[in-house]
Length: 233
Image (cartoon, rainbow, N blue to C red; front, side):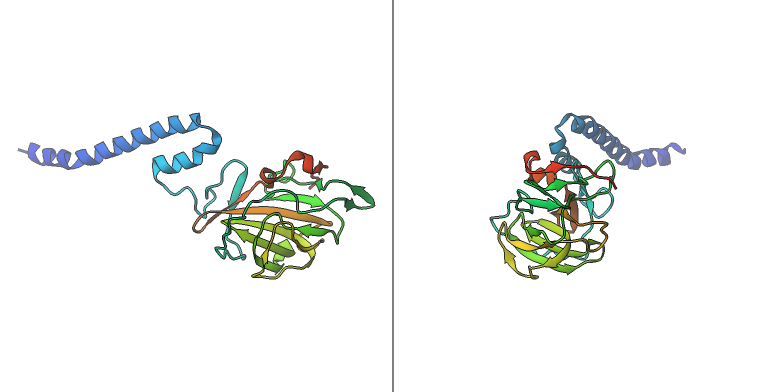
């Protein structure tokens, strides 16, 4: 009789089939539940419900609305952390000169994920070369020097965040230095991959060990702090 081997095969396969069915049902439940949640809550709930890594160095490395995937890059993460780690305001002090005109607020050009520059990972502020640049976060200077397409770059780290200030003409901060909010760290310029005097202002977040995203800098300043002139690139 050949029914016995079939029975044994079904007996062994039953747990696998049941497990697969539970996984399918669970994923369907997650797929129906998560879209009903607020956008800000979806990444965390997805990670909790599916118990899978949401932050990796793949193209889906934890990026969420108002963020973009980022790699570790050549800039180190020192692990520096201090209670005074808030990011806010502008890396300028008015008035601001652009060409021959003066403005009481910084001019904002290309925005984060600008329609004319969708891969843009920060905010660009057109400004004459030689304008003083100030940090928007206290912390440790983990980079202060030339860095390829970033030109002369200063990066300040605190509590899992890095503030990137790029294309400077000169730098007045040093690696390992602890700076306070509002300290001058250099002068604006046109170094690196730049087609005109401006400051590229970026904010990177270490979402977990070995994983990083760029965050929209607009989350850390308000519309009344700048004059929008648009992005032409």
